[in-house]
Length: 490
Image 1: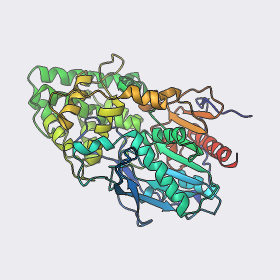
Image 2: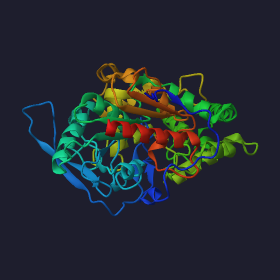
Image 3: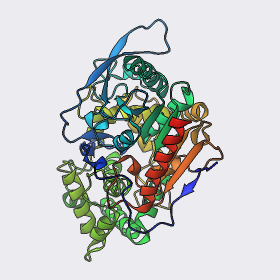
Image 4: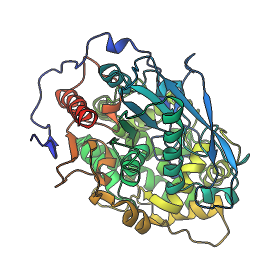
């Protein structure tokens, strides 16, 4: 039996060929963008919203249980979902796209992801369900902290299992195989849904899934440094040191002018907030490097070219940062810790800062993923400490003085972390993506498959193929098709 575990595609360098005909690329592909508000904080750097709404399909609604584990609570809420049955033939599989840490949109089933390409190959029904609390799928009319105890991994997985039963009955899917799809956080959910509900989910694709909860995620910025290379990293380090020294020498107003800060930098927490903003300008370009998402003003190569041209590295970095802000619709650089916290305290359902507030809660209570700058193997500011991130938890959700301790041990013990004991699950990861450190990169199981994409960015295999795709990305999608076929026809 052919075993595809632990695939490494580092040896391929020839120009890629597209795995599917141009007809497969004709499906509607609506560009998404990363959510860029002034709030950065604990941002997962993968919250996506659609730039414009595609006209179809229409949003549908399902009566979901508010609390799956309290038998006395029979309350329900409206959970949003989308369906695309264009390619489906009765008896065909169901491809279940899981909502993650942001709103879903018609594009989730209508061509933004490669799932449509796969659905045409396998005559599949595509369904996508929004994650509880995100978008319009909130169990409560506000996002007050008192309600957020219901925002947990367990509840989200139970939602998806319940929704799966609803769709199976509505569409009479009978013996159809169900395969869950997800990327980043929803990639973890995809793997965990197969793990916890194997009687409902026959296989899972868990792309760029950070299944290993970790308190002090120092490796994130280490991978950013490695991905941009030593020369570019040296420039970033030099600029970080210059800016740090300027602030220490009382030249804060010059820094504020150079980087067009939204507010004066007037406290140690403001310094950390500002430094995190500068870090994001580099790290997000790295994370989404050449990912086919049609939403990037630079990749690693063009970014490093910008930084290395001319004799003034400080000005070059400021120009890069300001272009990054402009591209994301921000007219200035976040620098006020107090304003950042104020935005994360907003409780409007599906408001401009709702996804950031909700993901911050999940990090503060379950996953952590705090991307600190304490490692000597990265070029960014050491003001990004564990205390800085944990204080955001306390200041955002309260009560004052309470120290949040994310329950990472429970998450790892319950779901297995990188040693997850599951089956019929594919874990694609890109080595450029800093999140791959927390993913499943190796396995001894004959039915758990790891795909290592040497040039891959965060979730890059989830986007539709392009003629410019690297050979390792093309081959990764081919392997996914092969393994999906194994699940469907086994």
